Figure 1 (cartoon, rainbow, N blue to C red):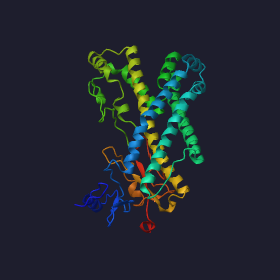
Figure 2: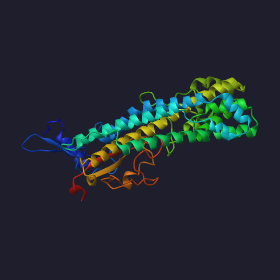
Figure 3: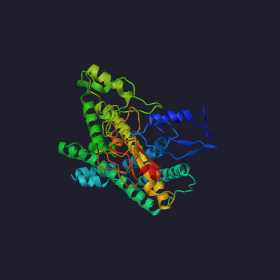
Figure 4: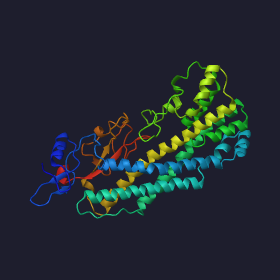
Length: 401
């Protein structure tokens, strides 16, 4: 059996060539074996079989960035709720002007700054990763990622402001329905104000889920069964202990709404007794359960945004490193191709699965968008909680001919 000097098994590579899943090539000569750049057609749906492959590195790198970004987002949401005066909300509600209440909302400067800094650090770190990949994939390449590239700075500024604006807008959408319902139904302004503060930071859909959860609790004693609640059951957890949820095709949470899996399971005994005894839950019990549900939903939203945006910044940072390498003459742009890489496991969604087949086998040109079921897209993610990445690689001109 032939073994290269770097420990690569030649027979295994030959077998992988037959399977169409090649990650590297070697050249056998009279002198020492030397590694060459990848130089074969890749399958349309790239298999992620080795942790040292570039797509795996990108996904793993994004996963490492998630906790810091999620922490910054959750802190910003909590600061947002803390900055809103209950008395000011009560006064605005009593005036009957929804706009006055919405004007009180918005991420405070400190919270927004933490989010922007986390996004910037993630992009810079991904750019450094891209530079490292370029240096190892292109023979003789010496290249350093420039964090102060004007184009990158402009993108970061626009991107951060856009994300913060989107967060603020979706928060206001979530609050608006609470205010409208409270005013229409003539509820006590202070009770409405307290409920408003509970859902600050949530989207319209998430705030509605919290509102519906409260309604369910108010009549829970009339139930004969708890449906999909699985009272007394256990939280579904992934390896490592993180709670997992069922998502729809757009990556939106299903069981947090339909089965209330985001509830605090410690209250299940109270829910079971309410059903068995036909005795209503007290307002204090309901408030605690709803508060815990909203708190977990806010944490879930922070993690969802962090997961999605960590992948977005990582993909962009790596691509920007290649863009800088092209601009510096390190590699010709016409030789670069970008491939959409799926995460091949049970969580692969039907929305992302067809993307590789919708694009050329070798990938799209560097400046060309990918064709996707949602239209042209320059980079993943395609939806919230998407885990797709981009594999950027150089080819020889004769391979592209």
